[in-house]
Length: 218
Image 1: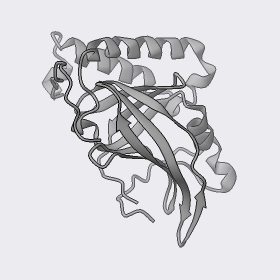
Image 2 (image 1 turned 90 degrees about the horizontal axis):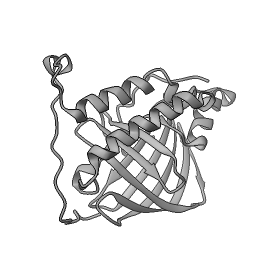
Image 3 (image 1 turned 30 degrees about the vertical axis):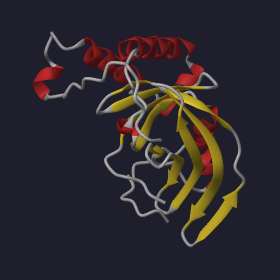
Image 4 (image 1 turned 135 degrees about the vertical axis):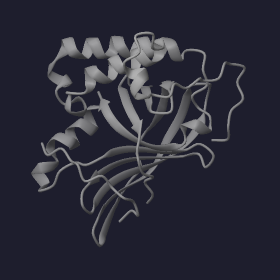
């Protein structure tokens, strides 16, 4: 089992690139800034997006609500416009990212149906190491289960990363079941700051993640 302090809350149902673009500027969120009427456009847009997804059960409810999906994508486009012209594929991308919301049907299917197997889905993670050129997509099943897919990554541009799956593993307490690798593609980090990242991938799916309060390792 991975050595990680895993969150117990569950829902039962590449080398640094050099691009001639502007660098990100980060906004520190404080109690006063949250109520400041003159807050920055990026903070206001981010807060609006997070409000929209806050009651969507990581995207499960959005699947049956086209109007809400449209509102969320509009909010994502607003943040993407703010992030345009920034580099989002440097070392700042390296982190354990925890999923807040997605349109990815495969992940939502597992989250929704994990109870069929007598368990529930915990944190869903992306673990990225730009320097080592690796990415793990992880779904945890507290207290001891985890499904993860290993990938190799390459920075393709200022905001795009190419990936290729190399292997997959379903692991429980005292056992492990390897699965064959499958697929390749790319994702673009449309907006990144010190709290959240907003992603669009080759299949036009969206992903919103936050920096997890822990680091996941195999």
